[in-house]
Length: 308
Length: 186
Image (cartoon, rainbow over all chains, first blue to last red; front, side, top):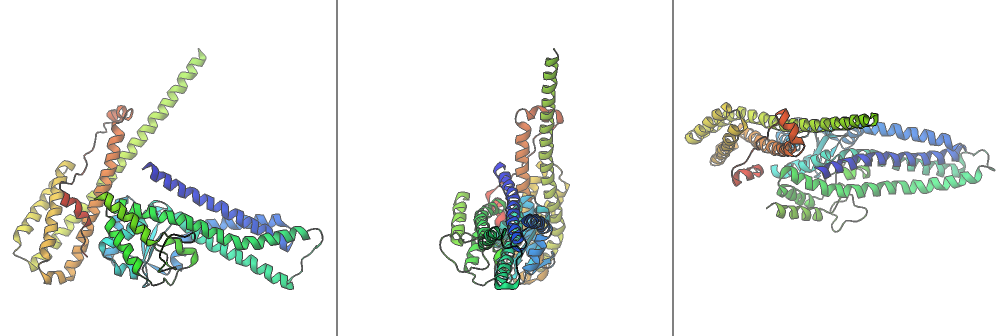
């Protein structure tokens, strides 16, 4: 229980750290843009940090609805899919959690994800393809995996990450473009003597950052999410006391090659298996958001031996 | 002399804070255990409501399986009358077993298995069985923590005064019952 709380605390700290990272990055962007356009970098910083704060609040409050809307998920009730609803309810009882909202994504590809701020405001979503291809036991394993993300507060960090990574990529784009256009002579900068050198340095910094930032954000996203997947698999078994269901579900997921239509790079770490790079086999690399399914199955089979 | 007084006062304050801390943690653990039990209770009630429907549906196709219907009916009324955990647990365990054999029996009737009403009742029953099993798992974990919390020193001094006694676990009697959690109905 103690290690479990530590895990949750760690996730909460990561969310704060993420905001710090965001604020600094936005600040540097703001300074560069301010200096580049007018020489007043402090105003740039203040505005940028304010924007970052506002953006953080918006993602905190509406991040889950944004994610659900962009994945094309539709909320369902018990009547729409009694088995899915029951399975989710079973797992929430097992974990002593409130019942989350349940969503269905009309897509043939097999996938699932969970999102929200905390267990009280959580949502779980599953694609039609996955729902149709799993039997009850396998569905239970998958939903237990998702509910573990909920219980461990992975969803909070992942939600903020999805919204933030998206915004960092966007911001970097804006900077790159504004510099590109202005260098074509679209606008003249005032005062080229005294501030010129500082401006040039900041402009270079802006370009470098706009290239590095999305990359950095992605690497953080990846490193964090891989460990989380292993943990969620293990906690799923703790909830269902049945590794076999999740193992056989993961095997079915390995065989699936369809790509999810409404998913983007910013959201790939949310899903139970990577929705973009299917059929990818072999060892984990620096750039995989998810451990290879083979290694996940291997670890679960180890757990199964320990159980019997 | 005055110093002595301050030290005593400080020690008393620390002691009081410590007692409050223990008290709160005991109350919280007791609430968890109570909550675990009420979760089980909700699901047991749901099962009581499902049983007559299910039995009626099966009866329509397999009227001569009299023995199993009667066993379920008598177990249902007996467990409805039971109040304490000690009374309830063995009866509920038997009821779980009886319902499982009812579903096993219905496997022999293809017409029944094609009945939409039966299929949805079957899903609801297996969901309820799972919920009972999971609620029991949660309850047992909560009770185990509670039982430890009330019996370790110095908590036991306080729990005795509060009248917090050990709670019984929901024991599952045989191994096949234990595996019932994982039964798959496709």
